[in-house]
Length: 445
Image (cartoon, rainbow, N blue to C red; front, side, top):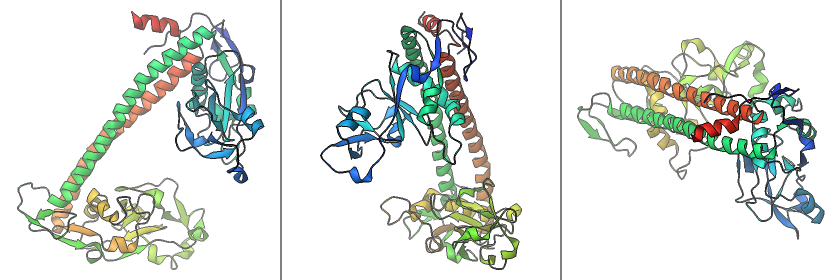
């Protein structure tokens, strides 16, 4: 969509734009709305005669408020007067994803809110939806983040929010702009959803290709035999199945006891779970351990061809150590030592497969275990084709995964562009950079 500029502008000192239409007002939010921070949580007042539901930061998402299973707290008469919500109020997150905002439409007959939220209540009949889009534009362009207190965790104090400059067109124009943005962002969001669904389909296709290759091989007409395990069903007749401990030269775990005492500014790279992705090692946020501890940490020293697997968070996620990380160390990761009995890349595909993950979840009511430990890894049942066939399967999957990665990256880039366009459209509309009334009239023709 091309932006048609509004025909009348005036200069103003506004962070999001330097020009607005001449008949618009630019003023601090405090001049047009009451900004009230929520009630301080009081653990001693979770029971009493005045229990009422209240909203938390997590309950307020972009343009959506969760009102099921809300916590209760005691609100006396003064509290109820001060912190009650009414339709048309806006709730703005004070911390976390600061500036995240939604409009309260009276989803519950009576509801309140806690200190992690600001209530913004228009005072002059301004349209809540227009104000919603104005606050969204400020949050999405990082204005609130730049103005937040410079602490470890960002916050948006009430005085900062009150002092922020917003543009206010006449009320009828506010409603027109809000309706325009409701309509156009719905279209953009639908396109984003389609791209996200495509990413999920690609992911599913990846998993199917991996599972098929590591259990059936590359020749679909190869005769098959049944296995004694329910995990794999039939496999090629010349394959075997083995427990991981019988093909690895060793299975151990990285540094688990006070690893931080070994940290240094520069030294030997030490991988953590956040560095281990499926089939890939990320060097972002690497930590280092001192070379003087090499003897103490010899048990967890990594060699090219070793496999490292995540224990918690995304248990079982596995990557192969390349030559560039030979001699590195690791923290709280499962290490499967390289062996002449398996091809490292092939085995990593097996351990990242849905069929392996099914083994991790066994006995945990369908939920992935919180810990992937040495015992679980040791007893993992893996398909075991001849070594040259392992190499061929790994090479085949490498090629497929490369193409899947390209498709996924195209989708993710499209999503980024759509989100950027969405933010630009919102910002342009609420600051008068486009003539929304004319845009809508032309669209209706």
